[in-house]
Image (cartoon, rainbow, N blue to C red; front, side, top):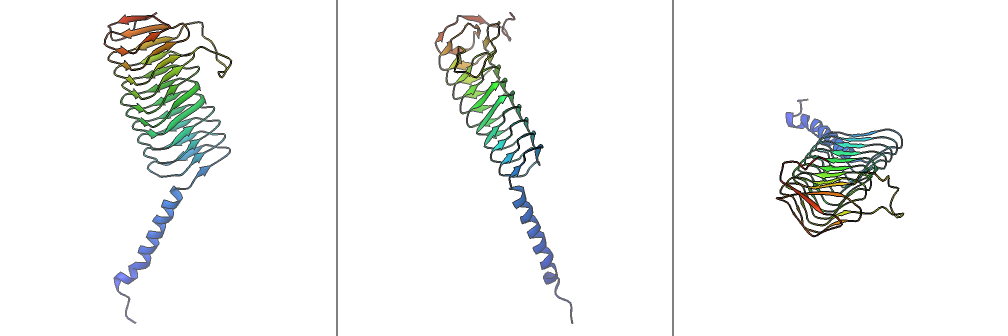
Length: 247
């Protein structure tokens, strides 16, 4: 019997390769869910939900996923990720450059966002600071209770709020909502009151469209090139140097 043509002999191999690729793609889009232990999402892969209870979550560069959640652990993500909600209770959130997400939320931990981030909702921490690097856009509020807020060259379409933290609206940033330093009350998550007044800096070429409302005593510095809405509850100290005066 004469051998089968080369194109027929290669067909099973091509089919096997196609099935392997399809299986790999399907696997990459599965949930990863644990109770104890960390979760690691491989760079460049697409997943559904990533979750654990007791453990951290590491997300490689370029990963796409839906919800990313843990209870006791931090979340660390590389550059160019695209997720929906990212949330932890006891742990920080750190995302690299060009991140895309709807919201970032933690209770006990800091949030740090790399350059050129596009965040479609709120960035919130209770006990921990928030920092957003250059080129970011947040279509929501930035808020903490016990924690500093800082941003450089960032646009926030909502409000910036804290109770017991310093605030720096850094060089070239634009807050389209208001800036509020609230007064602690029984309605808040327990707040550790600092004896030092919060320090609020509106940096060079920064803009706050809405009012600046201070419901407790603060020290406020506003650069001479900055623009703000009406100020209530504090008297602005103008400055024209690259950095605000040290107390």
